[in-house]
Length: 254
Image (cartoon, rainbow, N blue to C red; front, top):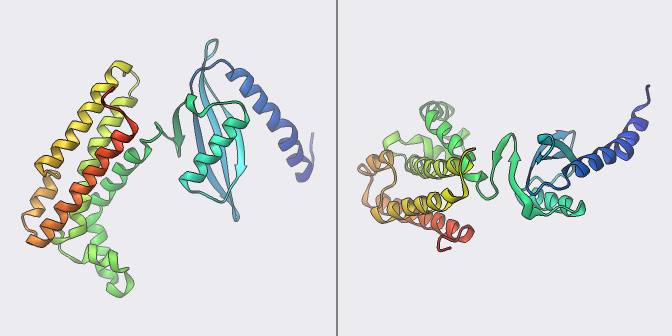
């Protein structure tokens, strides 16, 4: 069987895709929880997204399938979340039954994906800092953005931005450890409270003790009084924001 591009597109969009979606929803019916995943790819000046479902079938075990495929040039987190929510609602599915979200092959729980994704990025920056500094110095100030030049033109022990990178590396490590505990395959609901309480307590102790990670503490010893004070004020604000973020999304009192 062969057909032209227009006919093949029409058959795919009008027959095969709806039928595939129908089979998926029929098979899914009865599953209490499910995960959704999305990924985007560029085709010319258009951005296409696919939406997948991952769920448990009582008769066949863990299953997954393609649920939707759409075009949207808005790649913001808000736009993707809104689109996913609308697609689920249109098919009689509740966002409240979504147990996790997968983006770019990284399986994460809602509200936690940013913490897991930041740590590897920060580790890569730290690992490459000396090489990055050598590169930007070779390029010269005129070829670098102002912020980039200020970050890399100073000696490493005097680079104010590097202090923040060390601090964020330590902070993201704490979140990463907590999230990994919550996402491991053998964690039980009875352990959730302990993990969250422990994580919140660590953040509060760091704020009270004014401890920002060993590497940051070492560099602070060489900082001027004004830089030292500015750094401490901003890190306290960051820790406070993190604590408030946890309190917003998880009630430690219940």
